[in-house]
Image: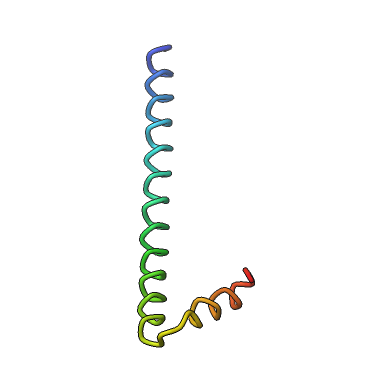
Length: 61
């Protein structure tokens, strides 16, 4: 009985860590794409105005 409990606990820990890693990876991809898009807009406009607009829209400024 104790070995089953240890096995389930180990599986729960591995599953939790895998979920954290997957969530981090998805968030990283999302924000990297958003940043790349903003950098392209800055390069095309020649100013940092797109960054300021984005900051104002998210109320970080």
